[in-house]
Image (cartoon, rainbow, N blue to C red; front, side, top):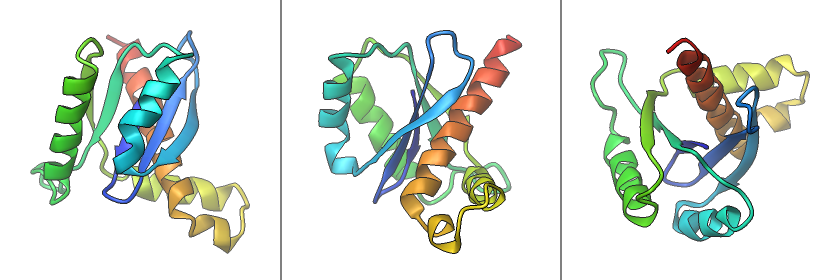
Length: 135
């Protein structure tokens, strides 16, 4: 399960049991994320969390890194049995916007920030799966 964390929305993506393809699951307000996950875990299993790590172009943490750090702490405290991996999220929002544009969706869909956050989470998870396939 991957998260594209934002202070207004968290994009969530999951993968199939064979870890072949990442799929957008939902976009949830940060205040509701723990309840959402607890409900999700009643019917689904999650092997690990992948969290987008916000960085500047020079590889230093971006301004939103403090919020992501708090989110990761909350995940660790609430779900200590699930390992967490951080993954550089630079360019995921731009890639998500480009994906939406290439899909032929209208301007309104391209401006839908929830959709961008959701696709960003998919890109994060797919990137992690591709990276881990070679480890």
